[in-house]
Length: 142
Image (cartoon, rainbow, N blue to C red):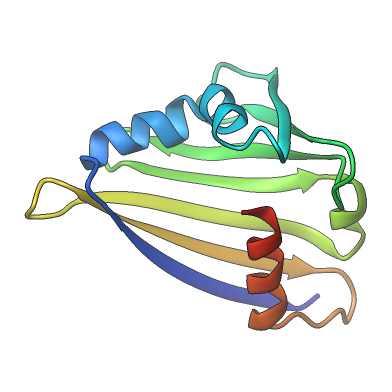
């Protein structure tokens, strides 16, 4: 197994707590509305949205993936942190054992927020991954 890590930071004018509630707490309702051309629906398969919840993201026809499942490992509303892991999903999981994400929101002095996303990719076998491939995949998703 090969482990590859990548981190990104984003600034937003939206206050950290509000951004966390919208993007993390209401993810299953918000994302299909923001990305109807790519996301058909997000279903909660198990749980109530907190730690242990499993969600299935169903993609629209014609994309590279038909679905992925993720599990929420940590959901901390005090520190505005969410850790989740992709655990299943069509062609994606042929190359990966799992992909873990840690998302953290923090307030900025101007009333907005800074979000940090740390991604950890656990590949199967000797599969090698590089930053350019990840960025290209993210651009296709956007």
